[in-house]
Length: 418
Image (cartoon, rainbow, N blue to C red; front, side, top):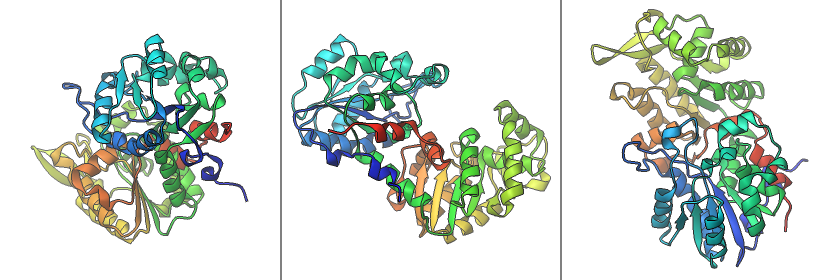
């Protein structure tokens, strides 16, 4: 029998870090208020604490690297000083910060660390080689990346590398996959928890297993939909948001010209054919909304899908769909959630999200929630302690469930050991 991913990756339980310089890659990329620069939600920061605290208590000389924002989200591409302050407050111990990533000042600061001290370096996405546009345009192997600036500057001064950034596991960037080529690498507590939770819902989930997919990022979802329907991981898909609307189009439902043009403007036309193929193969497993909600005269209005007009913009699922989906959730033994069903930020259209998220929280089934919008909306409406597992990941989670080999996992499995 082949070993599982968890068996092939060394965890921090396997390492001795006392007096060693440890490079820790975390994902503390957080929503930022663009006016004040304030961190709006620190879920990922909180999730990083157990690994950081563990390494410090074991005497590591800890340098932390992380990203915030990207060229595709330039407004949140900011420095990490506030992240360092938030980490220090949460840990109850100092976390130094330097406004440098891998230059002479950063190296000097790292070399000056004593046992049990922590330093957060500045945003690694200030380096071109760490942004997604570079990854998309310049194809490099992890071995190639050993000559990148970040790795070339930092690798020689560290004894080992720890990765606790599952949310970025789908990124083929130097900070995620190259250090493992040069030194022993270990998985942090969060990374191991994420993989364990995902194995629980993919390898032998309790039945029925329900996937709730919504939101506006339809592109990532379609690979997963095909995979979980084909391999039988999911018994039922409850679709909403743009994903549900694409399936409605694929099933020749007139969703109105306004919503249809919005989908086309997003570049999602190619997914209509994929949705049609899924319906042809797995119709009995797929549910899309039977009614929707729109704004009319400043109020929420319920509309049956047979009565949608061209000037209507679909903004939430309707009342009957809420009831139908709630009953399915109540009967489920495993529930995966990725993406809210409506534009919950607008109080006119929060009803679907609030109702279904409360149903998930109250359900007896094992629940896994992933994706930034999902987590943010759940924190608005439910006690997060009622959920079984809250993932820090969005894109990485979707790709994992799509059967894609994540770059981070391959790199961790290849890493040399002490």
